[in-house]
Image (cartoon, rainbow over all chains, first blue to last red; front, side, top):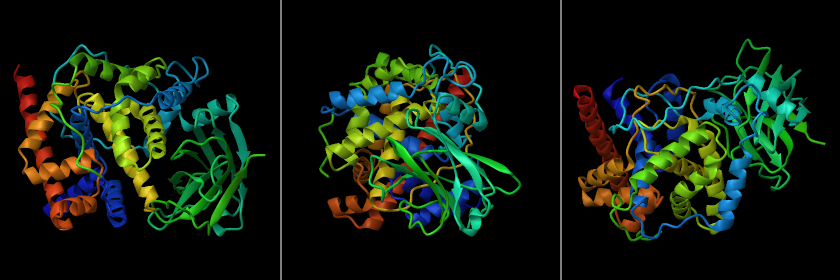
Length: 261
Length: 206
């Protein structure tokens, strides 16, 4: 990579770590990272986290979580770990479906590490077997998650599209199964899922993630990543949006809808 | 946003045993251990609460943010690599990312799209970063920056202020703040990388 290109990417990564990345910068960075996988894209975010943690630890005013909030987060956290025996497959518990979302998580490998300190006393976690999306979907269905059929609209991309969406309010997890939706060019447009939550204003559905339909697959399984917790999902809608998705959709191109009765 | 909070020596305030416990709890959560959730909230709650209050305007927003952050922590715990980050640094990274995302959404700006999965296992999975050592290095490294740069980084990374808010707060041109922060962080990363190389050599030579 040329120096000026490397400097530019470093600038963008730094701006992202401080929350000052512009929308144009986001697009530029995303495109570069897609084209150049394997770099340490999180290095500056990690650095920012370490600095924030180090400085926070010096605060004389550090307070624990308020009791009510503590209890709520505790209940949510404990509830999100499925009881033993309810997970699909073997032993690893409900984190396994979450692992299947790892494609959505910002992370990249790196050759350059950090300064090291040796402590061999800490136990090593055994590697776990990740379930396929199909297994995640089956597990959710087995645990009585909502299973809703898609209805396609008259949008040209939705011609003959079908499939279903599986979603669990309890586990905050879900998988879309889609057939026949038009293949998209990710540099021109992307599909975006919206989840309508009964507890929220319907003008502001929850962002369920951006995804693509690749060529050559008769059926596509897509994990649902709700941006915020969903109390009771009442309707799912897939729209066509600009690359990277939008915060608020103009709903001009809705291609699929699935409604809970 | 104000001038921050009274600070004491961050390193002195740390309990090494608590740091080891924090790492172990995060690893247990990654393994799906429900019983580790409470311990994580005890240990990481003050850090997350402190960051959330700084990045948000109302208590309600801060509470919502805390819930979202911990949901992310449960989901992402299995990505924690203890030879690359301290447990507190990892949680702070997740918290800051979520808080920045929330702010972007409030601004109706596009949300950063996640990247393809590309995590590679660390070479030395048995190595764990010591939080006291890290904090010491962070504090020393910050002290090697220009006072202005250090101040801007504290306002940005701890107080959650944007570059333009810092410019306004400190009466400095925006471009100067932006360049100063970029150079400061790049310099810090360089210092840590240098340190990393030294430590790695020491380990190899031992």
